[in-house]
Image 1 (cartoon, one colour):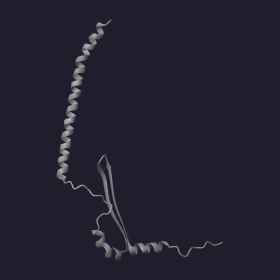
Image 2: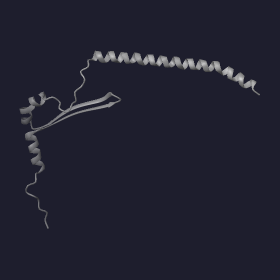
Image 3: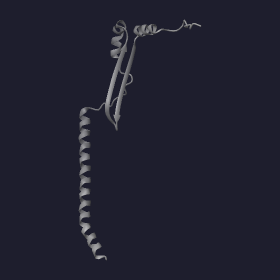
Length: 124
């Protein structure tokens, strides 16, 4: 029994002809961040169309804003640099306080150690 093909189906050529005639625009925006730090940002616009279709609609495609891209804070680089300097100063102060506390604890432990040893020797 031979396999019959439905007459209403579309072939790859029909799909390709329609895509090239109408065109497809794929607009993508991807951000990879870790702990609030942007590691990777990819922005892509892919246009699949025939030359005639692209020339006809190229101005509209290039003027269209990126649809999927979220709004980015409008902070200037000076603001970001000032915030960076402030955070580095806070980190340095915190590190210095921690190092001072560790040094004091070591000094106290060193002073108490001989007294502990003496106390151990006298107890028999």
